[in-house]
Image 1 (cartoon, rainbow, N blue to C red):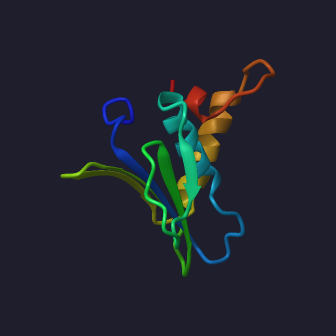
Image 2: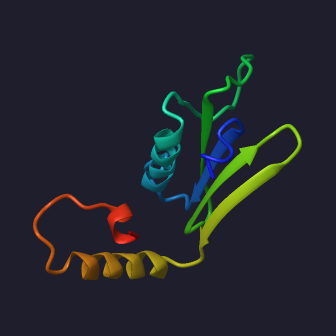
Image 3: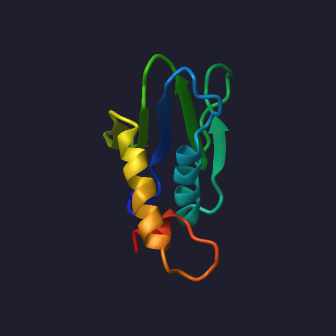
Length: 123
């Protein structure tokens, strides 16, 4: 999406339960890295809670929300002057993460020692 919507504003929003201690989440950081693969010169702005500076063209704003029982929700918004496109993933249970860990384990079984990441799993 970033390739097609390269000149649009980008907002990344992630939500987790109030017990989660890190912010932003690792998944949100991976989303930033994925945008950076296309837009090399991005400036990551963590939150935009106050101030008087306008948004710069290369800003990507990253919002972290911690509250209640959110299991995990990640959204990237591509915003133009006339429309918004949102891509959202919402987990209702931690079971999806366990399933992902099992799939990753199956993928790694029998592989040579090395450094792998989630991109390798989906190739």
